[in-house]
Amino acid sequence: MATPQIALLLTGNELMSGDTVDSNSARMATQLGDVGVEIGEKCTVGDDPTRLESALARLTNAFPALIVNGGLGPTRDDLTSEVVAKLAGVALLEHPEALAHVNSWCARRRIAPNPANLKQAMVPDGCELIDNPRGSALGFALEINGCLVLTTPGVPGELAAMLPEVVARLGARLGGSARHVQRLQTFGIGESSVEERVRALGPEWPEQVALGFRAGMPQLELKLSVASQTLLGEQQRAVTLLERVLGDHLLGEDDARLAACLQDLLLAQGKTMTTAESCTGGLIASMMTREPGSSRVFGSGFVTYANTAKRDLLGVSPELLDRFGAVSEPVVAAMLRGALARSGADIGVAVSGIAGPGGASEDKPVGTVWLAWGTEDDLRTHRAVVSGSRSLFQNVVAAAGLDLVRRQLLDLPPLPHYFTRQA
Image 1 (cartoon, rainbow, N blue to C red):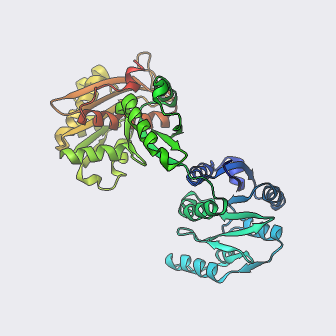
Image 2 (cartoon, one colour):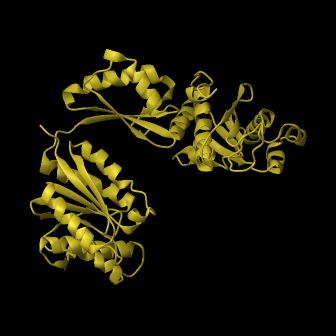
Image 3 (cartoon, helix red, strand yellow):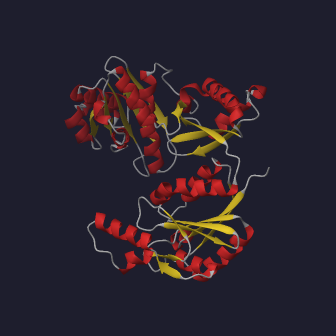
């Protein structure tokens, strides 16, 4: 049986100009796939009522269902309700439940609802409302030309809160065959390397399991999909094979995050961690403290961007700085020792590098970074060159710093694939 397909209509001038990058369609596609529904066409239009009406008319005649994303807000360029009502041939009416929702939203923020807020209570006559737990504008569902039209806000957090209801409505309407997806989180290995290792498995890989990817920063998500519950055993066999061929690159399942995995390890081993950062400007510490409960394993970190800060806060000697420079093995090792001594932490990581675009020399090009990690008795160092933008450099170095500490706690080989391959 063919997988049912729906259309997706994104609206907003900010999407057309590039001021906003579309992340909503990927989120919708992922969750719709879990109930066996695919997006057959995606269309993006600006805040133009004629173009929006034309796109709505075409898509409602071509698909059994349509999600409209965006255009439900309080401003004059939020046109979705008006255009959908016009195409359906119904009036825009103030809905009591939508009005109560707007008033409640304003009351929680201790503001009086103004005409722009109250505009969001106007919805097409005869529609069914879709709850928005986070925003002021409710979504709605309405049938046009035999097509179920579901409207959602463009704000990603609001869409995420509404999607379970939207997806449930579409699953019930279209009756797709739900696929079963197991997600695995990895770090330090790319899609091509994963593909190469899986291909090398040959017939060992169960053919009923589809392998997909969702690239992110700093992790790569693997998705193992099977068509029915009867194939869950094959899915688990694929997980076991990936554990074998990817090994220490696997962080965990579902939404496992690098910093959270490290925090759990530290907690399990009764240890605390510190950081000494130059080129990453506190990003490593930020990644750690972003996780709830981080105070149990992370007491303090040091951002020592200037040489004087390395000297005064971490005790790095001026002689080392003068002789070797801030981006050097002796200095980064001294930074870590100073951080360990001053924080009283059991283990830590220090980084010093050239994020660019300036500051390079012949022997230290842009992207050069020295990392030190470990304990006072087992301190390790490594030099790497990370290509790319300043932001990419900082994100990669910060994530690698966390991973190197994770690896030492797990007694894994000291240098991971992403460094040995580069070397």
